[in-house]
Image (cartoon, rainbow, N blue to C red; front, side, top):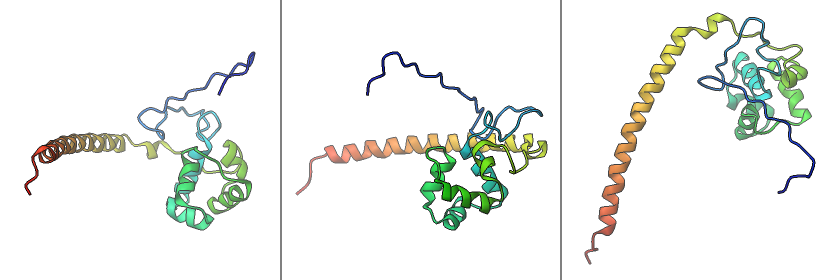
Length: 157
């Protein structure tokens, strides 16, 4: 695939998400779900969680596969107009809010929802998981070494 002569691509705007996609440094003046702070997938996931639905439940109500809904929330694809309308109705938000963050939507998270105790707990869980993964990687290495020895050993007939 070549580039067209004389055509320049616009620079890609990068957003620093912090520790994960959902953690952002925001101030009181920032529109949490506006186009500069959130994507369609961010707004969809937030509205789904606000409605108390799991991905599986929402996918079933929409009549789509779970992978399709995950693709929408991960911004890998977008729904067609009919599904967008159904999403808005099921999540009690406007279609415009889902697309742009403007209009009738959910309220921005309060400071209470971003409790530092939750962050400390999350970091502790991540560290524990990292340690467990390291131990499993070492165990995997030992098993692979053992398997190589067995494969290289002469077969007894």
